[in-house]
Image (cartoon, rainbow, N blue to C red):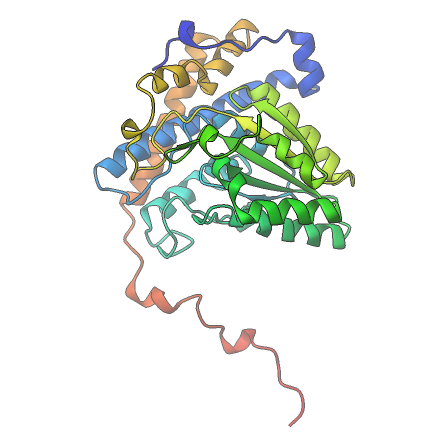
Length: 351
């Protein structure tokens, strides 16, 4: 585990925290930290299980936790979320049960998708969280479509569209931002720039100084935020979502984060990353940065933090045990949810 002395600290005073996070900022920080601990415990456990062959695939979000938890806490119930590869924690923070998500990872009979969707691609309709696509950037235009519907219905809601740095070179990025800008849609484009599009570094795919600067070409405001800073991430998301809901139009936030693990369980970053990348990334560990801030503000003791970490690990362990004791989907389920029953078909008019 990263030692606190090696981590870059978050430089905030109480007055700044109140201004950026609003009333109740102390509990917000505690809640954010506990969710980040759960995400870190989930990633560690699932990566180990995948290596043992007990789950088929996993894409960890280690290093992205501050952005994901901030998005879950800053978004409202009626908002919609279109994730990229590493936003599963957003669904959990918004209320999707951990046990259900783990059933999905094991593709068992309690998996809402009945094992038909690729692992680590959950869909959680009860929290307005749409299954991601492994095709790069397609979720951007899908999100814009929902935002267009929100505007047509005069809903006081917004849509979050997540994607990585690599997706900013995709056709859907152009089409989505252009359409959102023209029609002034209530959508927040969230670019999780972890500086690697699998093996491609950002400098090799764009000449722009920041990815957020691309938003200006479409008539959107774009800002760059330290995505390893929970406070900055939450403040930026809350502001952008509020603006979108109030009719202020779309915006883009580029969150600069550090990918602290392989791109997925199918990747070997040792073949392309600099030898010191892991050490550099560890200096910006978002979980430890928030832990350090909580300690400085006197909001969490070492003993309480250790207890929360243990509780998170136990929660993940219990969900895994439940999933491993659940049988796979029955063969008969292959045709369930495929055909509509007669009771769902519209009645015919006339003779």
